[in-house]
Image (cartoon, rainbow, N blue to C red; front, side, top):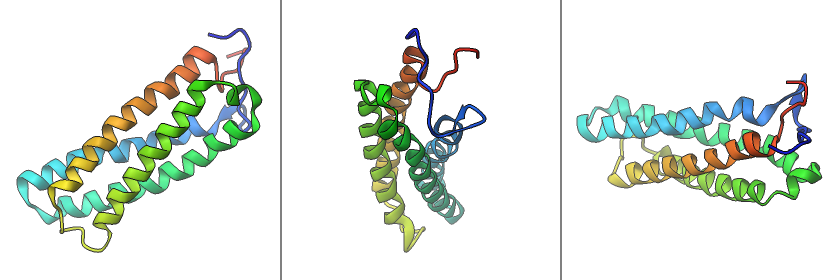
Amino acid sequence: MSKEPIISRMSVAGHPIHPMVIHFPVAFLLGLVGADLAYFFLADPFWARVGLWLAGLGSLGGWAAALAGLVDLVFVPRIRQLVIAWSHALMAVMTLSLASFNWLLRFNDANAFNPWGLYISLLTAALITITSVLGGQMVYGHGVGVHADS
């Protein structure tokens, strides 16, 4: 870990907002894989509606969390200097773009499920995994958003 922690600009009482709120959209988008698999095997329209909601909440929540991360990327010079921060941001944009496209495919008719929704959900889950590893390396390896007295 770096000697000096990198303090977040988007924080509440010293706690960075991005790591606090990103867990919800990640959980929604990973849960979408389960809902899609349930709909694929059971053909119950309930799971299609669940998938629509998980895709929407995951996408919207992810973009909101991304804004908090973007503020840190843009306004904290030490974060901007980290290649891993740019890699994390680029992967997050790709992941959220794919998740938003997945939501758009379902938006007009949640029951119009085709295997593409499941494929996109699986790809989104894989990208979330990579993006999360990069985010974890920023926190634990570079001390982004960590206070020295914590």
